[in-house]
Length: 142
View (cartoon, rainbow, N blue to C red):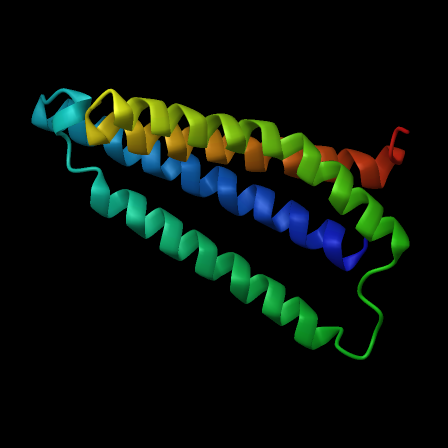
């Protein structure tokens, strides 16, 4: 398993754990406090998931880089797969930004704007990671 493939798989797992943990916290808070979702204290858990998840991924990447610093970590195949995967996730991320801008222009509640960005950006990352892992297994379709 290449350096990039391993880090993509780890990032996929970290992202999935963070995304699920966030929604478990928000849903359980809404249920236990008997509040609508828009009134749940969601900002703290979202920040924790983003900061802890990003830091954990950075630590994993740095650890792998240090362990393999004398080796060549990326080759032409890695770069080709990366370009292919970025294209797959870009549509969802672009849709997230567009939706958020429209929602902000329509003065939609911050809760919904943040969650559209959070969810669609996660789905973009998920699709990019899935395409990356599939490309490592099956090759890039031209």
